[in-house]
Image (cartoon, rainbow, N blue to C red; front, side, top):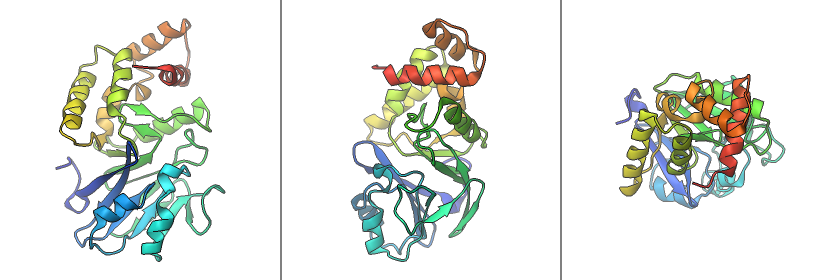
Amino acid sequence: MLPNVTARQMDLLPIPAFNDNYIWRLRDPSGRALIVDPGQAAPVLAAWGNDPPPYAILLTHHHDDHIGGVAKLLEHWPDTPVYAPQDTRLPSGFRHVYGEQMLSIGPWQFRVITVPGHTRSHIAYAGEGLLFCGDTLFSLGCGRMFEGTAEQMYASLQRLAALPGATQVCCAHEYTLSNAAFALTIEPGNTALQQRMAQARAQRAAGQPTLPTTLGDERACNPFLRCDVQPVREAVQRRAGQTFTHSSEIFAALRAWKDEFRG
């Protein structure tokens, strides 16, 4: 069982898609569910079986590996509302949501959080002890900055890191092992990180996902949430050959290091 999550939220399923994506399904006791970031329709339909139509589809950003299955799913369930950020690159007809908006979906409530950085209009959904964060925060990592600045991405991650530590992080990719290899380069003496790497290896060897993780674990292990911690600051400044004043500068150098990392 997932810790600190009530019974109505326990049926949480990461549906594998493509090579390393996860599409999230959250189902209530009646069998109705919501879907998050369906980049493909076929895996969703295969997992759905004879369950009733979903309450809604939630989208975090416009990339095709997160929205590519929506049209096909709407052929099956044409009355399903689709919640998404306002972005002209998304199809028309979706229900636009904005930062700090509260959504009531089935028995659940979620708060929309703006998290620009990976894309300029990226959003996350937080509520019921869960965080659907797309490609902003990963297990032991964070997304690339395709459209935003380092300052924006750092602020977005800080916004997510401020949520309760028991929050289940439901991100969209299975990157834990590769991210752990980089994180251990930064903090080789971090015992919590060493344990997380061992756990992730065992999970993947057993064919299990490494997700969801928790924000508490991420704050203890994820270097991108630890830019104010001395070992991370020292490792980044040593590699950069300069001293940084602000944690956002540490983050920018750390993200650039990760972009070049081949571990």
